[in-house]
Length: 219
Image (cartoon, rainbow, N blue to C red; front, side, top):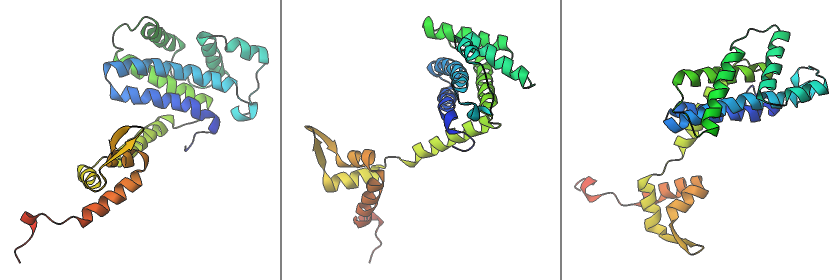
């Protein structure tokens, strides 16, 4: 994954999971997005503190300090904002805002939801999660990489599409197949276990079919 170190892939995948729900925008997805972006913040900090110094720019921390920072969500935020100050970085999102989003997350997670999260809350915690990840794992264009992965996954999904004509041709030739006492269309099996074979066999069978009489020219 371009720009993402191997040890940052886990936290990045948390961001990606949250982003997919954020983009869907349904009520359920908004709730999951809020919870997931909040989790992404905590996972990013937890992962960073567990890294070897060489993986975090040779930054050294006392073991006792790390243990204290790892105690809970709030102590992890304490570490992060201390880090921002130590590095003389711009504070993009206030700690009070992240704590507010975290409280809303707890309402969703522990009490079964307190309504659908408003868009401004989702946008706020998304910005915070991306910022935390970018700072800790030294990724300047996290937002762009995230969008790139979303688009790449969409292209993959769109690449494998069932085609009625191929289904009919394959099933007319090969019929049904029994697996563990259950009958399946051969086209269904091929599509799910070997898309390339599904595509090639379907195309070959279609090419052998006689043209419709109504489409043939009078000789």
